[in-house]
Image (tube, rainbow, N blue to C red; front, side, top):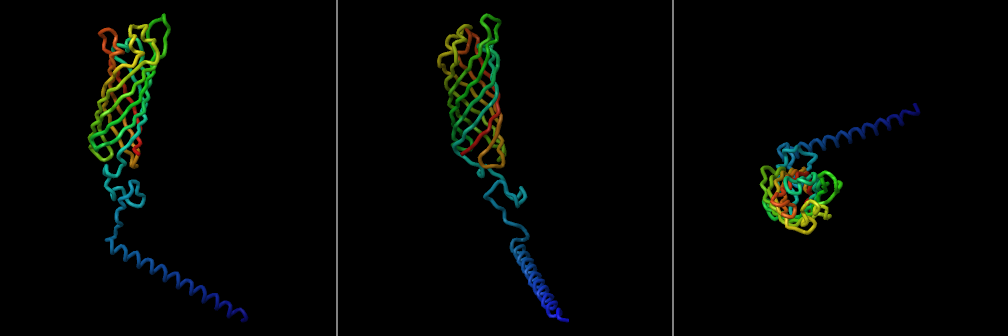
Length: 233
């Protein structure tokens, strides 16, 4: 009998805690119902982010205005070969490029290109096969159309300079290849944006013409293809 008051106290405390908890749960439910009734049962779209986690993808329409615009840098990796001219005495090889530019308008971009490709002579010895590099620096003007917010197609014209790293091509009747010479060409590309403000990837193909790489009246047409990744600051 001496433990009866203690038992009653414990029971009252448990009952009190349960009552308070039930009341709190009821208040939370009432607030949720009130919020739902004010918003019509839906949550307002958060238009400040592309990667919304709490809302379905259709809650935010993706537009190009959500992506970063302005200064950009691209890293390019691919391959280049020549048809005619220097292509008759050399093999295709890998190509790398760094590009920096600025998006003036949605459809107009300007930039600068530093590029290089590595090739090997491909003629019977003597002399034996030798490696040479073609290095170039060019200006770039690009026109772009945007079928969707995530996809773009572009066409570019380029003009600048190109030079071979050694005078090995002089052995094959191209003594001007190792001096800085004018070069020009164009490219066509497709660009795909991630659902992130700054990044996109793409594929491109293009041509290069450089009179110093011609042989006699044999025109040298450089053809290249590459993939790139772009970061817009």
